[in-house]
Length: 451
Image 1 (tube, rainbow, N blue to C red):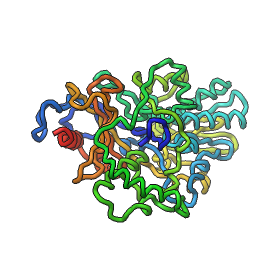
Image 2: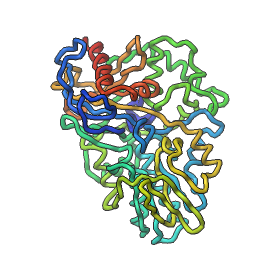
Image 3: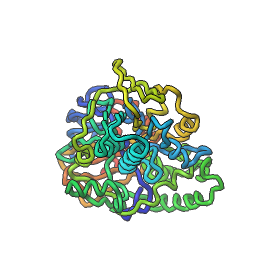
Image 4: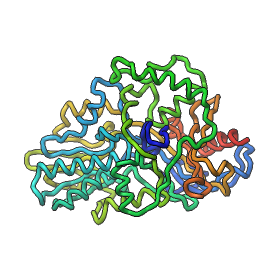
């Protein structure tokens, strides 16, 4: 995970990207929020029974299909991001965290990419042209705002019934429960930090080292192996797993999980070595937002109108402009289009491009992975854990990596809430489980931690 000075990696940690609808814990339907039923769970103490929860499931969200992108092994390496970002025929422009070379997998990388796409259009087009922007996350809204401010006519289409994409602030026990992006990563010289300053909202400098439960021996063992990453001959095509022992100890597997699935949203076997080099230039502490990320999103949006529940199924471009087809049959015509959908949507092929995207761009889509990192927010009657820590780490020898990293909402927000993460294989397995099963799994881990 990131160190407090920002030197380490960067991630959304739950951006990725979430589909959490209102419901009750007894329901078998996944992806929801609700009130706990108050019943005892396998002999757990009442002191740790949750009273409410919020659960994310990015892989089942048709408008995300992932949390954020990662570099899979390929001959393209980091060029996959620049190829994905490249305009097509002066009609189609691309933005989103997956197109960011400087800060991939982050909210501020998404915002920067949207402003970059807007600058490309401003350079190519005449003021007053009609631009359709697909997606209303930071990339889409940042692009739309810049274009509108420069005199362009802008239409923003959003498939969901809400604005924000993979930024979605809900509330639990009065605390901002971020279903997607949680932190401003690398806050020094960061465009999102400037947005924060413009809003005047407070922030909380998160201290990753203010933790309990870390296995220093396992982390030290992992650090020795990670030094070998720097010496890999072809880091673009080699996997992180190829540098690690074939049969790691349970403790080392747990450390691997904390450093990779919970950071990159992918397993070591899925990550290229080059992926681990991304984001190293980010500086400054990571910030949590006590008043919520949605306030920054609203500030970027301004008065830009957004047409929600507009599911895009096709994008056609020609010398005359672009035609966007919607699921319900409507058509939106414009001079140019900006595509800001997540890499998971591009990989799924749910949007038909006519003509097909150039081979180089299709190769870029293939070279980028669709990572998964899911969250479970739990509200308790009172905090039963150390109120002065930021992070709780946990090693389950029977399931290394499962529920291995928790954030305390008490230190940052003064509320009795815990935020648990699962990434990679664990997240995909839990995505198929019922709400009861997910909450029970988490509570068993918490009970064992505090027995």
